[in-house]
Amino acid sequence: MPYDTLLTELDNGIYIITINRPDKLNALNKTVIEELSAALDEIYQNPEIKTAIITGAGPKAFVAGADISEFISLEQDAGKALAQKGQELVFSKIENAPKPIIAAVNGFALGGGCELAMACHFRLASENAKFGQPEVNLGLIPGYGGTQRLTQLIGKGKAMELMMTGQMIGAEEAKQLGLVNHVTGTDTLLQQSKAILATIMSKAPLAIEKIISLTNSAARGEDNGLQKEVEAFGELFGTRDVKEGVTAFLEKRKARFTGQ
Ligand code: COA
Image (cartoon, rainbow, N blue to C red; front, side, top):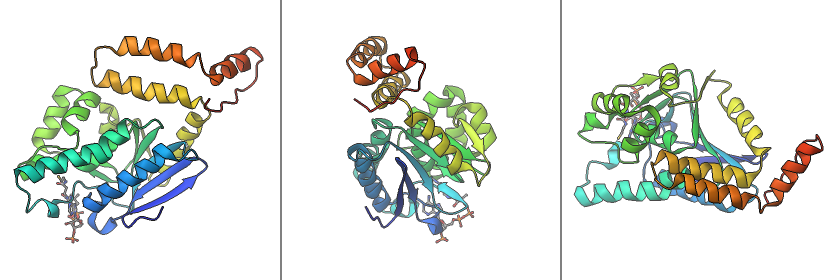
């Protein structure tokens, strides 16, 4: 589907969404949020899309945050609605997607940009990437899930420090903290992201879907995670893919999963 602020491409089952406002460092304005929501609906609904990558256009930024120019006229209720709508339309929709969505962070990932990367199932970053939650410089706090997801990913002490100082960190430090899984060259970021997704796409999609939802449940600290795992483990035995996976192992051949 054509969008004004996104470039999209389907490459062998991988839907690549590029946020495309490079002259504004890909800041998330109202249109970007609405279009990301529509692109996420495509991911949920289109069976040809198996996995997705979110990245930013241009050499400088993944996403430099929510579009600050839209903040000037906001009062309390509108501020609350902005955060609520963004979380529902985009950030929670990414986190809860039944198919893997990863962030390929190619530059500044600040504020809503860092939050967008954190809503994804995991992150790769190019060596020039920079992460931060600088909202405090505006008298604000993260509003797209940053207080929750940064704490889940890097722990309370470091999350507090980053949010309270508004300080930026580079890709290597982000990796040491557990915010990103891999640091790549600037030219190899997409290629390495696609290679990981190709491995994931060779596995059973229904098992991948359960891994996403159960791991999210653990990260959110839900107290019935172990029981949910028991139920999901049992349910998967009702799928053809488990029969195929187990048979293929016993026959010493590669499994051919169909998602059934
Ligand atoms: N919202 C709106 N516009 C933004 C933006 C944002 N979050 N981040 C960058 N831009 C715009 C700039 O206003 C500038 O537009 P202009 O050319 O029309 O003046 C353009 O993008 C380029 O940014 P610029 O600041 O000139 O680039 P830089 O290399 O000097 O600095 C940053 C890069 C990322 C350090 C700086 O842009 C910045 O601090 N951005 C805001 C980050 C932030 O606070 N995000 C959280 C928002 S809640």
